[in-house]
Amino acid sequence: MPAPAKRTDVLTAANRSVDADVVELSRLQNLLPPLLSVIAGMVDLTGFFTLGRIFTAHVTGNLVLAAAAAVGGGPLNLAQILAIPVFILAVAVTWLIAEVSHKHGPILVRLLLEVQFALLAAVLIFSIVTRPSADPHGLMAGIAAMIAVSAMACQYATLRLALPKVVSTAVMTGNLTNAVLSLMQVSKSRGVLNDDSADQLRQSLRLLVGFLVGCLVAAVAVRFLDDWVWSLPAALAALAIAIR
Image 1 (spheres, helix red, strand yellow):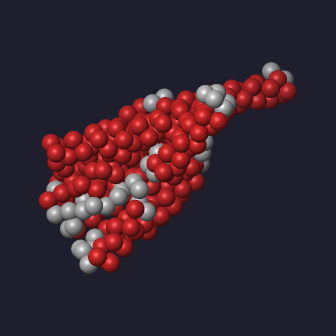
Image 2: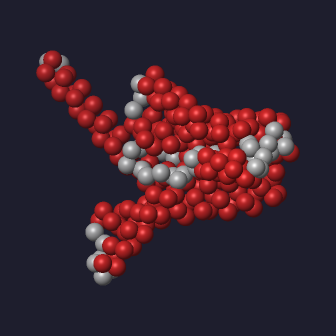
Image 3: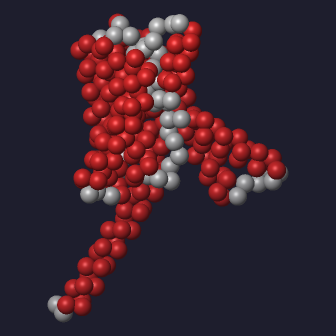
């Protein structure tokens, strides 16, 4: 086969691969966020109730709790303070994993979802073995909380590195703002939304509902499953990997 024809075949194959990645990323951007928001809601509420009132997804909330405890003279949970630097470190490590892997597109999404699953599975195993909920302010609870914070940091980083069009699946303030603004636009335009506003409203509501469902399910599960409650977000993280 002449050299120009070979080059043409290579370029055609490369273009097909790029097109397939674009289609797959579009599917993942549509299917993954609601599931990830459910996971975030579960992890956040489970950590709050079983690991000493620490936010494992909405990590900046820990600064408020720590400040309130310091001013009010209540017991200070060191894990609430450590959550911020641990989150920063975990995001940096996730970036490093992405860089070293040299992966992009759907393959990178899968890799980082596997990292998140490994961390949530580690929380589950650690919790079953050490029973941190028995002493929510103890060392074991602090370690479990830091692993959970790392899992959520990985989720945040995954969205920024591999699915940048997806809005936050853990901090709902922005999603609530987007939903309200979109609804106000509906009012202004007498029930008519342009495509961008409609898409924004749909995304925001899906994530809000997903996070709320995750919180509600975890709230019930904590009462019956004790430390085994971590099996729920771990199972959903495995399901996220399976979405292709």
